[in-house]
Image (cartoon, rainbow, N blue to C red; front, side, top):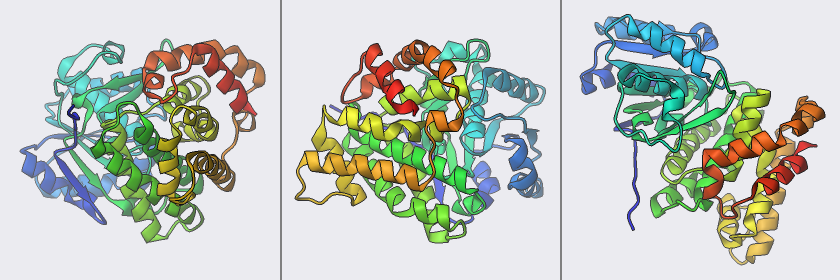
Length: 386
């Protein structure tokens, strides 16, 4: 049985990689980029500097800077309309997961038309849109290296998973220096998103030896460095390790798929506006304990890779240490429960059935070692609330 591996054509990783944008576009034969970013990145990030560099190399760029957290189909539509007035030949996403996911969605719709709901799973999108160059400014989502984008339907509030090689960027410029100013909460949430990517890719029913290698490396890097990056924002070694882990995690789950944590976290984000990495972290320890019953050895290997269990520990002991380590990490990084985040109990519990149904519809729970029923997901949501 073969593994279907999809990767960016160009991956440039390291300090200063973002400065290579004009050279990368020239290598790809592209001249008329359209930049997609968010208001914060426009004011405080590298956008203006990159635009000046593009102009110095004879490339005028269009700009859409109104992306929103947890990108919506309305926002994507506005960006497509802004791009459509000019003759652009590629899209550049600059920012965290939201601008990158928006850029990937815009590149597809600009070339193929329709609405984002036309492209959600189970639809597979392999016909390419406009080329995308991804420049991440956070260490977490791995979107710069994945064949997925996640867009919330502005009408139904469903958080739609859209998949296929069409969403994998043509090039990714992975520059950890862009993360040195990340605030502590964002550092924690995006780093825990990476850890979730790595663990879920490793235990996924769609895993393969290639994705395993990326996942094991990424989870060890995160566990060894996330608290350093959180406590010491200027620690370049920790920031570099977290950025590499994020890309490895993206490659891992893009080629193996995520599982139950992601399936259940997306509805929390869509309905209650919880940042994606944070909603993953809220669920990760409890769902790990639930899922490990079906494949304790696989989760034990995660514990060993992270250094929280030894080679001689039996699987049950290793799993217990993994769950304890994940719980302690959430505590150290001040991860709130949904209740502590401020989600009213009445609102949360009223949405249990909807959240469970949306999770199941995403397809991600079917990749889990232990595939839950709707009622089991309702129970897990209850257990994670407080």
